[in-house]
Image (cartoon, rainbow, N blue to C red; front, side, top):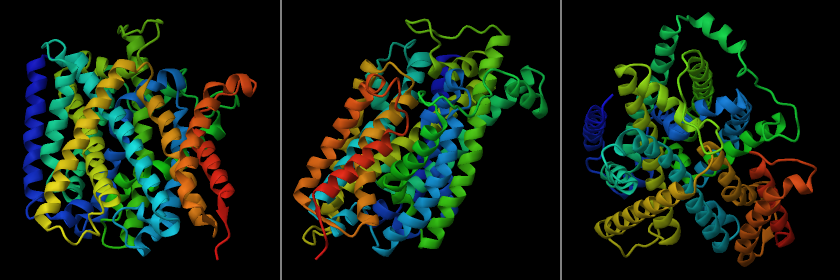
Length: 489
């Protein structure tokens, strides 16, 4: 498939996306931008959240990671199920009861301004890093397979993508994203399903044949029982549970869409529906991953190797979809890839803008600014965060040496852990804290966790931390808050 055809596909998709954006952003106000006028349809939010939750990381890295971790990622997905139930019945009722626009306002009401700003800061840090990881993987694939051959620098590719995202998010915000994420989720899932179908056709397999081929392959293992491994079942399961709570329930981007629903009942239906669909979608990605490796082996397809002669897992899906399954597969792969990229970045820009405007600039409380003045400030913040994402993605390009999904969850453990500790302490205790000391506790906790992670094999008889690091980090934060607490008067 030529670079020109791929470029035409990208252009056509963007034109279609902008048409949807124009229709959904008419008459948009600040209330529209931040919470979609609290009128979003729950089923649209639930469906669109699939794309926002999965992003390019799942689209590329989960199938690729099957080569080294088999179906072990499904252990994490099972943990997600419990985590989303906690979100639906513990966190959402709090957010709706307090009628929050920014979920970090809860920390202000519970502890004080230092805690409030600390929570908002850690969200900004988490989302900047997370969104950069997610967008990086997509842009890097396009750069490797398309734009390098055209002589276009990586920096320019990232800047163009962020520019496109800016164009369709700066006006409509959450209202627009609810609709565009629905569109993009559809294309992403269609791309995965078609890739599976094309591989099945080339291998002359039906559904039962796929099942037999995978279950008899080296990739079928789901449960891992060696406690020293990162893939040990309790680590993955409980890590997945708390990652879901932290990266969705304590994340303004994901919750901003939920609190845009009409009421708590619809928001809960959204989360539970999303949970069930997410389970099925992740099974699809794992099946695709196993088929990719089996197909590559049987067809003797050369896969890209790194300096250590190991397969570059994030390039497995692109290599086969673009070069070995025909033009139709390649077209849908590109559209699916872009569809996986945009939801992770558009929602991040909107949420980052919302948190900074509300939690740091006090836009909701400032009665002196007119609607027009608030819009100007919001636009400036929106564009500033786009520039920050651009810088972080380029830096990550220079230092990345691991599958993106591993990097993403490692950093999530460090940055979302303090949020997990703060909310757990606020919800499950009645104690007050010395508010001015909260930032110190929340900074020290990730530092301790980074040291533990680096020296875990020496300190704990070969033990390696995995996704459970977010639990450890949250526990350290909780203990720190306990040490600076006092009983309520």
